[in-house]
Length: 247
Image 1 (cartoon, one colour):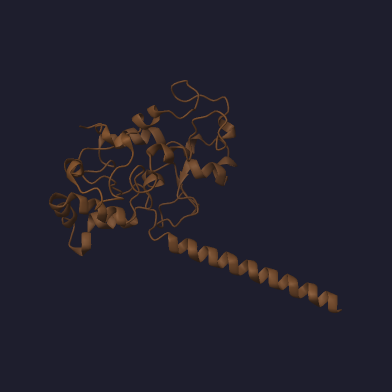
Image 2 (cartoon, helix red, strand yellow):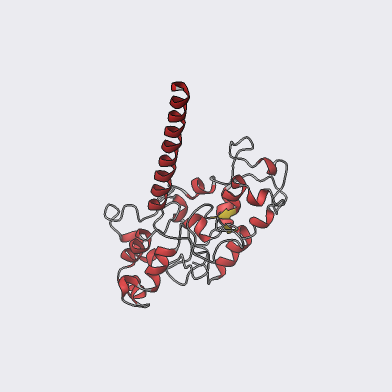
């Protein structure tokens, strides 16, 4: 009798402990994600007109916006290992109505936020900076471009080579690979070719084809800024020393 009660006590204790761990993990996860994913609707990443409206956006659309359709089976379309690179915001907080139909777990395809983080915060900055109206951010951009950049980055905007990954390549290799024996290589891509008939191996040409920068007020002041003062808000990746496509 005593042994049975002891086993029951141990089992209950284990269940309660696991429940507490799961609850604490979910709470801390929620705390880390301050802003929701919004999908591309109204999301303007760039400080000028934004790639969502410009011709460079169309290039991005061709490169990344059919990734979900490449998943051939229903099993793949619900497999987290596939979705982490073929979708956006898997398992994250997403604004209602923006996720895949019938699912609240992800947004189809690799959208802007897959690389630049949830857009809720920096969209608000662009639309109503410090609650001063829709033109307040435009005024800030004109008067103090670096402060405008800081405002968006502090609101969650991520840009590889500046404030998260040290280089653009580092971020790309989260889902691409530059070695045929890479550990993160997708097993279903073995032997397949890309749209140009070449092996699916990451090269610098990937970055060049995907380059959707535009020249804006930031580019005009960057050479003169105090690098110590603006550490964390200026480019680290040597790629940024090249001219934007629309220069």
